[in-house]
Amino acid sequence: MDAADDGGGIGILSPLIGYELRRALGAFLGDFTEEMKGTGMRQMLIGILAIVASQPGIRQGDVGRILGVKRANMVSLINELLAADLLHRAVDARDGRAFVLNLTKRGDAKLAECQIRILAHEARMLADFTEDEVTQLHNLLRRIPDRRPAAD
Amino acid sequence: MDAADDGGGIGILSPLIGYELRRALGAFLGDFTEEMKGTGMRQMLIGILAIVASQPGIRQGDVGRILGVKRANMVSLINELLAADLLHRAVDARDGRAFVLNLTKRGDAKLAECQIRILAHEARMLADFTEDEVTQLHNLLRRIPDRRPAAD
DNA sequence: TATTGTTATACTCTATAACTATA
DNA sequence: TATAGTTATAGAGTATAACAATA
Image (cartoon, rainbow over all chains, first blue to last red; front, side, top):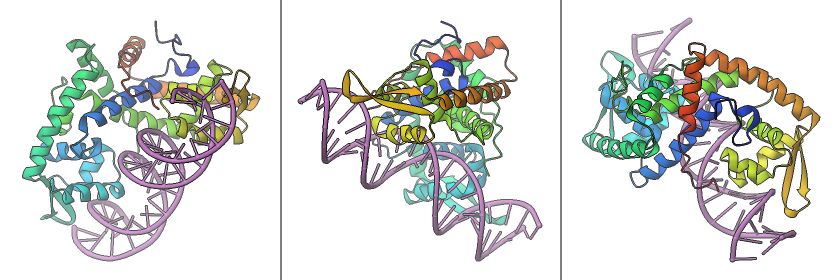
C-alpha cells in the first residue's frame, strides 16, 4: 500500500506527512506518559533537564529557544524543577538579567532514571524496525526544517 | 552526522525518535497554522471534515476513534462545525443513540479550499526531499504502532 | 532601545468522572 | 448491562501583551 492509498478511510489526510506525524507523536506520547508514571516527570521537564545536563550553565532563555518554548512559558516549568530540587538557578555573572542553570545531584539522578525508561519506551515503539530503518527515520525527521518565528 | 551525535547540545535527547517527532510536528504545525490563517479552520477540524468526506454517514464516535479524540472532546468540535454550517448531523436510523455525519455544501467547499493550502504547506515543508524520500518517510511513520487505549 | 525574566490571560488539546437516553 | 453522546472540570502546551530590571 503506497502513500496515495486510503487504508483507513481518512480521505485527503491519507498522503499527508503532517497527519502521520501527528498520529505517530500521539502514539509515542501515550506510551511515553505510561512509562513515566511514578517519576513525576513529563516530556517537557525531561527535555529541559537533558539540555541543561548537556550544556551546564546554559541560560534559561536559550533552553527555551532550543525546545521551542517561549520565555513566558519557561517560567513555570523552571519553577517546577527548582521546587523539586532537580535544577539550580543563579544570576549570570556576565549579565545580571539572565539566569544560568545547572542540574542538582537529584536532577542528575532523575535524568539518568528517566533515560533508562525512555530507552525502553523507544525500543518498544520501534520494535518492528531494523536498526537501519530507525537511523533512516531519524535522519529524515532531522531534515524537516523549523520555520517557526524563533519561538519568541 | 549520525543519530548518536549531538549537534545541537541536546544531550540524551539526540538519538530519540520521540524528540525528533515532537520537533518535526512543531515545525509542521507552525507552518500549517500560518497557512490556514483566514480560513477559520485548524488541524483538528479539517481532520474531522476529511474523514466525514471520505466516509459519508459515519458516526460521530467513529470519527473520534480514527483521530484519537475522546467522545467527550468530540462534542464541542462537532458543535463548532455545525455552527459554521460545514457539517450536518442526524440521528442514526438504526441506532437512536448515535449521530451520523455528512458534509454540507459549504463543508465540501471549505475542505477543498483547505486541501489546496495544505498541499502548498506540505510542499514547502518537504521542499528539500525527493519524491522517494517523502514516500520513505511516510511509510516509516505509518509503521509506528498506536498502543493507546483506544482513545476512550 | 533591546533583552531577560516575569505576570496575566486565553485558546487548544487532552483526560476523567458522572449523567441521559437508548440498546 | 453496555454504548453514544453530553456536561463539567482539570491539566498541559502554546500564544500575546505589558511590565521591571538590566544591558
